[in-house]
Length: 475
Image 1 (cartoon, rainbow, N blue to C red):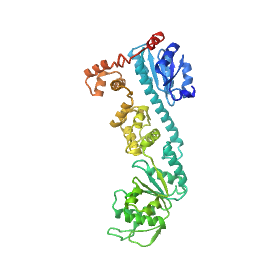
Image 2: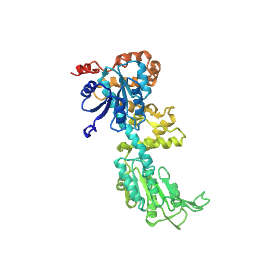
Image 3: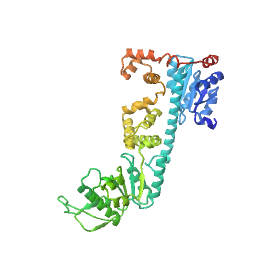
Image 4: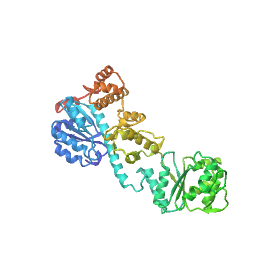
């Protein structure tokens, strides 16, 4: 395929009827780049070239079934849409069992076919993202610090630069973006990697407890202090201390922390003897410290001391390209942690993740993957049905074609019913129960929406037949 086709949806038609291919190109329009091969042998070589987004396969003999199985073995596997003059339900079930994304009986419905091709194209894009994510996980330069988007590429660059020096670093970003992960990455890449990494959060602790936790105390310093105790700074000797939520420190503690950073010594509670401090200090906050400085709630001198180098972690909604990589990483690590069988993510599952706004950022994504993994049924893959209810809605909406409101609603209903029928192998009673509607209402919907006989309004339905019949329709 030439470069001009790269921006188009690349469809491979496996059918010997050249007249059918010619008219199909005209019907699909300029958004599609359709190539035709007459045999499954010719199709096999093209499937391995990464030049195909969707396969449109005529189902007529055992070779068709073999090609479908070969397609499923590729990584990523291109979606296959099957069509046939044989309308028997057994044929459709056989194709679906072998991995076909959709099945159409000829003459083809143009509107429904375009919808299916668009959906298959989106799935292939997501499948390629997943394949790339799997490669990156095994070769990523900083274990745990995942992300290949432009914002994260900058974060990687700064992390590598500051790891080799003792400069104090301030990491900013919303809650759940992974600030501690970045701090640990800096520590692992530094010369102090074999020494302790001590993390401490100042959030929601009283001032007296924070001071004791950070600097320690001597025996008898206060009631109940039966023996001396080292603080977090001393525990991190020779290594790195990570101070999270530094914006929550009270002003008196800010002054004491500033003295530690300037003089590299501390004093335990109940003692005036200075204790040498040999630690790398990394701070983090989700608050606007510059605004706090202007308001007088954060010391300006401390701000300049801790923010020698600033690393801002963008929220997940601003780096959606990283979602496949993060999702695959969490899936693997959580499966191992929970002693669960390793699974894979379907493009539909990933598409729902991409459509979410992620107010809880990476932490929320990890929660969704863990919940889905723990509660999933015995399938090999995590699919749309394994998502939390709020994300299932996003997955369904992603399948709705844009355009006329009435037809969008009809297509939405049609797709939900088709999906449920396929899930329950055509059992209408189970489908009605799954959709929480009566069986009589389901039969009415099947007739109204034309799920069994066809789909779309009379104006939108165009009979696609082979040869001259198709040509007459188009003209």
